[in-house]
Amino acid sequence: MSLQEQIKIFQEQKVRSVWDEEKEEWYFSIVDVCSVLTDQPDYDKARKYWNKLKQRLREEGFEPVTNCHQLKLTAKDGKKRLTDVATPQELFRIIQSIPSKKAEPFKQWMAQVAAERLEQMQDPELNFEQAYSDYRRLGYSDKWINQRLKSIEIRKALTDEWNRAGVKEGLQYASLTDIITQEWSGKTTKQYKKFKGLHKESLRDNMTNMELALNIFAEASTAEISKARNPKGFKQSAEIAHRGGKIAGDARKKLEEQIGHSIISKEKASDYLPPTDSREYLPTDDIDDNE
Image 1 (cartoon, rainbow, N blue to C red):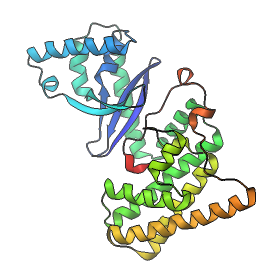
Image 2: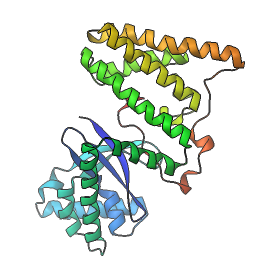
Image 3: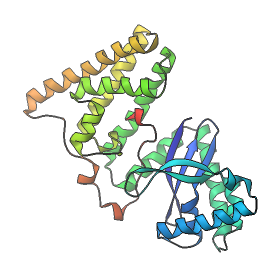
């Protein structure tokens, strides 16, 4: 299952959502929806409201609540927690049970979200435009955003190569990513995140411009070598990952000789972005092997 967690905004209120690429379906956090419709910004109170409503709907035999979906969504503290979610169709019934003047506008908003996603599927460029707007809202510079979007493009080309070579998503993707990262930075992904003081946050979203540039170079080099060598399976792809990462690692060392200091920085997004309470936030990458 390939899931993409996003933050959607309804009348300046956040609604956590997840797009399931395989099913081509949206899932929305039910607690967030309850918070919006009841004008209850306190998460704990909104959660209690949903728990009571869920119990009543179960007693009425409402099947979607009985078989409620749960997905790990990013909480305000940055940690992922299992959260009740529902598709738009399931939410329509739940919304009918909540007395709120916002019910109809919210239904229209959900329909708009679905329509926008279909447009993005037809025109991939719209995905980049949305990502650009999200990062810009967070306070990232135009230069950083352009590099970050390029890194997404390069990463996709690399994972396409791994898929062609028969590498399995999940642990094998994560292992290859770790090889590339260690070869160019001298640190495993876990060590790198610890060095920056990160936990569940995205490593790429906390790289400096130069770190991001070297990471792009490492992954692009790996993808190009893979195209030329046509590896089969994880083992051969791992050998190429070492080579691609080392090319960027050698470039890093030569640059550091010239500038007299390490490119690997402890700087992270919170060091140079506006305070969290004055901006929206993006969730961490749902799939850790993309770190």
